[in-house]
Length: 135
Image 1 (tube, rainbow, N blue to C red):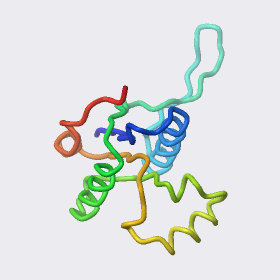
Image 2 (tube, rainbow, N blue to C red; image 1 turned 120 degrees about the horizontal axis):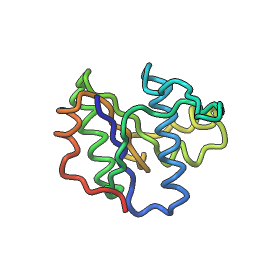
Image 3 (cartoon, one colour; image 1 turned 90 degrees about the vertical axis):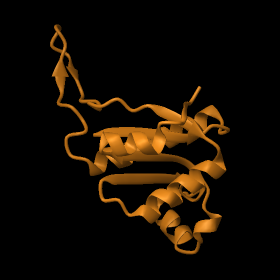
Image 4 (tube, rainbow, N blue to C red; image 1 turned 30 degrees about the vertical axis):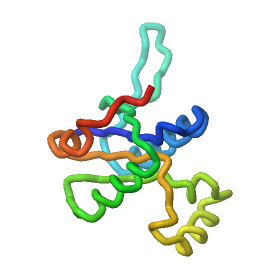
């Protein structure tokens, strides 16, 4: 399996960090076994489990993110999971606020700050192989 995050390359660094964290938490809550077990160092200190797969962070423009999200959703490929973190979510004060705003927002009004794509390595690569790393 493979995971990539794709973030709006023009966002400020703080929003990039927040978007990546939100997407990572969302994915980890849905995929069993994504987080490794707790480990101990040689001094007996416990280190909580972290992701056991690499997660490259790629970059696209705001418009390209929206197009990629729509493209993946329209394919309805059961081997691909896509999670979008949008401006609607980022500007909401609570999850209830997000829910209330989202139900009144059409897809053409939603701008994605980032996407998380998870699935079969070959399919994820096909969807993302020509994207550049976020720098």
